Image 1: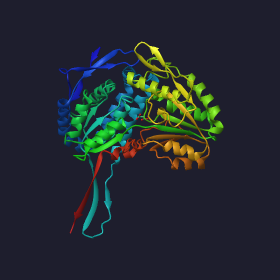
Image 2: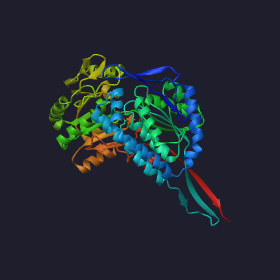
Image 3: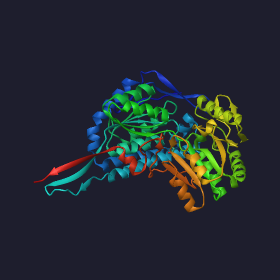
Image 4: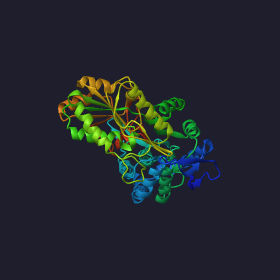
Length: 476
Ligand code: SIN
């Protein structure tokens, strides 16, 4: 079993610290350890990033882009090793892990280029003796706190724009999947990022995040995780008015209207619902199907779901890997039991799979679902597809919006006017229309309502790390 280290101020660090096990959810085996760092290590990383800020932000955008492109190249060259690390530490099937490495690398390419387009402005003056300009500046040292479910892409979606803008970073990966971050850091070292520009701290979430929040040298926190933690960060950010980008929970509705192309809809719902075993913030979580096609949809969809192969993500045949841990597995079981008790029918699946120390749950379809069931109110984060019958567009829209979340929604309809009317009424930051996989580096990713603040990806993802400085120049 390998002992991995943190990376602070251009050095591998933390050898003397207690360690934290990283466990393979497919079999419960410990696959490595990382240091259990805390406040002191976070402070050291912040100091290093702060020292690096002036020189890193003074480089040209073209020079910074060179580092990012090198990192992108290295990621693609090391796709297999990164993918395997990801699968081992969080269970994702290899085919999805490889896809995530490419997705993660695409953020580096996008932001390397986008950094060259951080334009200022010249604004016409109301007085002859003045020139009015807007200059753009990097926000400063950035803390990037990332989740276990997309250990590579959520890092690059954050550090890509931060680094391109001129901000040194402190990465704090989740305790469940820190090894992908360690591997990415190794590639950052190989790419030659200057000392202090990229730092990695593993260990106590409360101590590390606590220090990132309270240390005045950190000017921006970018976080992906639960809405509950996001709210805590908002409270903690108040004293320093620290800048925040938050990508929080979702509870995505999928609306399948009676004019949908059924095969396309089935394919789209399977792709969204079962990506990463349902452990994706934008996974479909509530499926609303119009009554005219309800029975046919449930049947076709269940047939497809039955074909999904559950197993260890290292097995190339696997479509659905294990859930991340026991808590995740128990939550899924609790949601299914609650729905069954309240009258939902288990069409397929509906039980854990007993493999010694493996956290598996069968891909599940439930019909006859109603609003009062927990899985229609809370994010299940597992391979469970609850299907509810709806009659009208109005009812579908009302039910879809009936949640504090507003991250992603999906609509399946072949009627353009109808699709547009429905989507205009959906309070969601991302909508897939006849598309179960809307994510890409060049588009804004983020939510309305309690699903977050700000957007990642696209040109908005760059803005999140830039301050506007208005300069009024008297020339007479
Ligand atoms: C997430 O679960 O937040 C990431 C999903 C994506 O980027 O597509």
